[in-house]
Length: 216
Length: 216
Image (cartoon, rainbow over all chains, first blue to last red; front, side):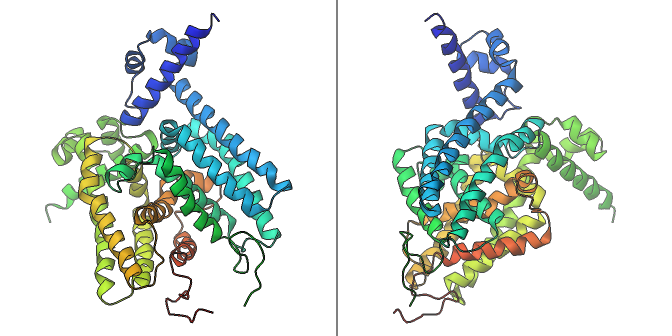
């Protein structure tokens, strides 16, 4: 019970930093600005996160821990369900995860485009795992005769692009396309579109439900 | 002839700034670092670009001028060719444009994810035009009975995601997927994948070439 105020402080720092990193960029934000916005003593940031770099590292790792877990849980379903169903469900779960962490998604996906030691570590730790799971599901689908054969890295690029991009540029979405990606219905609408893309992975003799249709 | 050394200086500043903004971020780069890397006097940066902000503005506008021109030239072909052919060619030309300006593409696409006055202006000036052209081509295709009906803003998100993402994260591409997006063959390989996506826009009774096939 005595820890309650401490984790509250940590939470305030996290929220303030996500906001500031998104509006001013990581390098453009000072530790003092984070402390001011969070209304905490600046010393708390060093205490909890060992400074601004540690804070970013915490945010990125924290995000990817949950992200990879979401993928992994679906991957384990490959034992019980076909690859197309597994991939569909995985896509929906990733969209929901991104929606639940939309401010953080944006920050993380932008940071990943920079060359830095942190990002190299993220790639080795998390993005290699992400690739492994996606690749395994696609390969399984090809083996099962459900998915058409294709160059798997290109399928992965497309899937990740379609999944991540709306969360990377919410400003563009709302100001140019008049779409509100922060609204819950966006997830459902957009998921329908992604299902079309997922269906394009299917072999021509597979119907949308993944049942074999007699080729005419 | 006397202007030759001047434009050479400008070019050096541009190249150095693209490199530094990509590796350290815009806010993380100082005017002095740009001058040092470009091996020019720091006063030249103020003279040509009125400082770091003006330099970024120049880079972003310059990039989008060419980008929009590429789209526009294809859009004008709508008079002579069907929407599917126009969109295919437009996609190939955008990929080639991005390839020719790949360091700058990456910088611009990352900057566009931030909320700033510059980016708001870019959206109003360039991204609204981009949307107009893409939307017009898709609408024309639906009218012509070539494309299936769909929610156009979602088609635009997907198209832009697929086009831009590989250029936004070359590091991920090479270190995780072992794909070299800076190689010329990448454009051709990836274009083939995008053609599959473009074909998914077609109505079921349209063959890949856009010729009407008798529905069975």
